[in-house]
Image 1: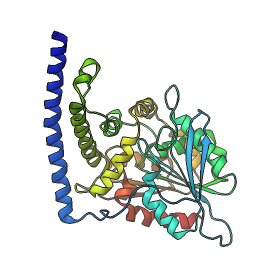
Image 2: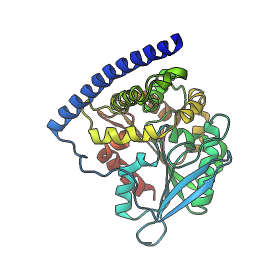
Image 3: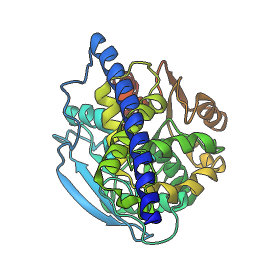
Image 4: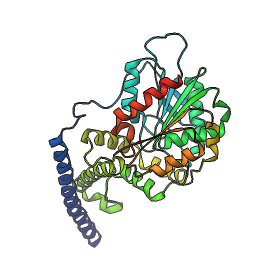
Amino acid sequence: MRRAKRVGVAGAVVGVAAAGLAAAFAVERVLVRRSVKALGDPYAEEVFGDQPFDEELTVTAADGTNLHVEIVEPAESLGEPKPTIVFVHGFALDMGTFYFQRKALAERGDHRLVFYDQPGHGRSSRLKSGDYDIAALGKSLAAVLNAAVPDGHIILVGHSMGGMTIMAFAEQYPEWFGKRVTGVVLMSTSAGLIDKSKIGIQTLVARASAPFFPLWGASARVGGTAIDRARIVSSDLAWLLTRRYGFGDPRPSPSLVSFVEQMNSKTSVETLTKYLHTLYTHNRFPALSALQGVPVLVLVGTKDYLTPVTHSEEILRHLPDAELLKIDNSGHVVMLEKADEVNAALLPFLDKIS
């Protein structure tokens, strides 16, 4: 009887706390949306999500994960084939990261495009045991290239952990660079010295889409109401954290924030925690030597909290011939937040090296 009473009290406390926080976060989220709505949301009518493709593949990586791959073929072949562009997304995201770049390049129709979901992300499978490792992600990229781009030149585009994946690939397969890989674009990434507290924020963003309060053991039997309230809290918290740590503009498009938060929330807590150690220990400055002599474009937002400008500047110190573009008033998801500016730099770079 006493135990049941304690459970009831615990449930009541959780329910009251959840209700209070749910109200607070919901109010803040509504106020944020209203403040942006007054200025206009440029993406209010944009239907984010799956985009057309010509072929899809399932590629099995060396670690046993099955990687979901989508290929967009060029509209027509004119003369010498242009390089295939392969996009590699970052931690807690998926191939939707490159939504606007895919849209612009598919409309032009002059390049073959390859997108894939990293292990444990999007529609790719999870590791059955052990932790994820950036070195293994480099091998996953190699598996995708061997399956989807068996010949011809390649331009690699990586965001955040996707950039680190490209560095791991360069470390393991330096002979590809200058021969098969003839260009690299690194967005909002780092060659090492990742700040644990900042990566932890990105993890929290994704974890917040799970119930925010720990309803373990007997207290979980208090019923669905408290759990539902906790889920409301976590959803609004995740949205606010995504806005705060993913974007640089104080009033980003709510539609874009929701799109990024949805990618975060689809990545399981188990996957996120299995990546933490490899992100903390990432150090691939020596691997950058493989990129010397290959055209490299480095892009970063001036308000990137997770991989700040100094990390891109350090990459330039090792690759002095690379181009560096700092995009004002943008955060970590620069290719979404400032899509027009990123595309205005990316497309000419691709044309120059194709």
